[in-house]
Image (tube, rainbow, N blue to C red; front, side, top):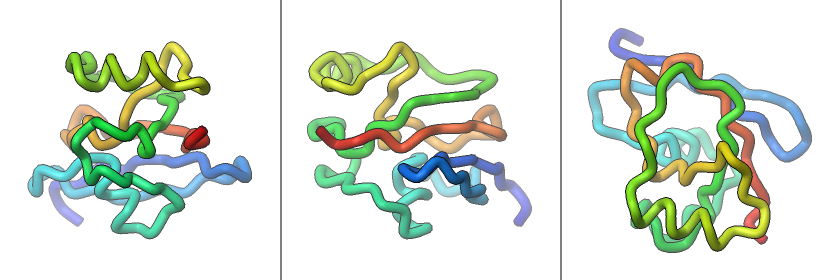
Length: 107
């Protein structure tokens, strides 16, 4: 696919899958994972109010800083790490090519 990047997702069992994500549709990492039927609740649909799309970034060359809503949600999570992000807030851009994330537990 032209205008696409690869995102690598570590599943709960430790295995990894590679997803191809178009850069020209304005999608988020969460939307790409849902479209590929990964086990991700994403209950709020990308509004940054439920944190059920929580991922840990294992490798990335460049990420935007979390906005205030995302930062607040991340502070409330019991499994948050220094590299935790809400996948609904990570928009697919060419700079995310090669991104590696780990699905995190909901509670």
